[in-house]
Image 1 (cartoon, helix red, strand yellow):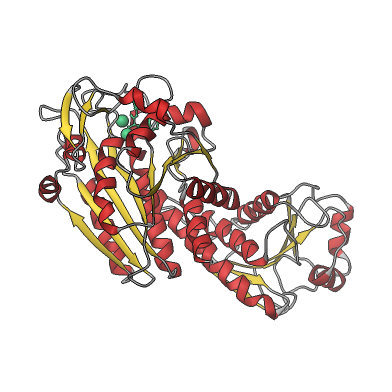
Image 2: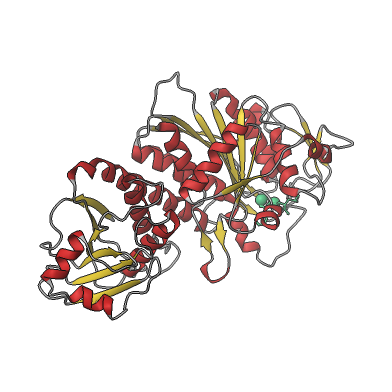
Length: 496
Ligand code: BES
Ligand code: MN
Ligand code: ZN
């Protein structure tokens, strides 16, 4: 899908569909007013008839409007007269993208007539529209024998900009929006891919592929033998029961001077989580193919950062392993030694995410990070606490936590902080090792966070528990691409 901007008068343009935004008073202005006069007041007539509901995102598609170059006119309601909220603008953009998916529409020109959005600039608007258009073209048919064709808008979109001095802002908004949406699509693809295909080795290959497309990304893969030499006994205890070898995948993006300390992203890449010997019930277990969605979001962000060529250094690390029961699997009560030297009593082999992450968190200190953010489908408990709307945020640094919270608000990909106070740390004490890998029934997401915190003492660190937001269940089952928007917003904010 291609999105560009144009300053050419849209009334003259031959296009499949010309889009206008309309406020609640239905007073037409600017280019829409011109289109109305040219068509002999056709648009006002339709609006007077009441065909366009007064709700942000309501749409009406008009065909064969007289005297205009466009085959169709799409009117989109902003739902308010003057300034509208960011959330309503997002609704509008999404509705527009859906309406444009009608068969027969291969190109469109979008004219937003200075719709103003509270606290947001033009670049944000252009970004939101591009993101909605691109995200709405997403189709996952990798495993279908017949490929989906033409059911989504996948043509050329042009954003009309009246005043040339807004070109630069609009252009950067368009680029950001499509890069973020493409990053989300990559994350969704990896999440949706069946676990017999999407193995740790497959993820390693995807990382190599990314660095082939983007020379600014350098990929290094660590094998089980190399991890064993480094003493990653926690990570390797997870893959012990699986025929698929674990991989530690390091993607290094260089967009700034060597002296500029990197942001390090660490993703949980459990390509399938059976629970191991502490096996999960079978109902819904297929969804544990999504247990690598943290890793998938790291891939999505690395791609988006490289596509935009951001002036920062970012390292994406994925701890990839499959959690299976077998004769060689780790057993409850087994004690393993992590790379940090801390010993861990594995009381439940289903609490494996923290085991793969803790060694990755120790390993990445070699990058001398400015901040570290891990992203993981870590606990069912976070769904009990925050439902399927909000990511759980935990951090050892107030500033970093605030920055991520704001990035979540700005991108509408929100998180909420939970405490990591010392009181909780006690729940992880073990009679036999330095640490147990579970902390009992209460505060399950926080004790998981506390566990990770014991391995993240040397730097500013945040943990995102995305178990509730990474995929949808039911008829719309599939990966969401979250929290790519939040992480990209955080990185963009750091760049400006
Ligand atoms: N991958 C799961 C967490 C999960 C569960 C995500 C359900 C989404 C939906 C994780 O590895 C896990 O099994 N966690 C356990 C931890 C427990 C054994 C302390 C959990 O949440 O039940
Ligand atoms: Mn588990
Ligand atoms: Zn898991």
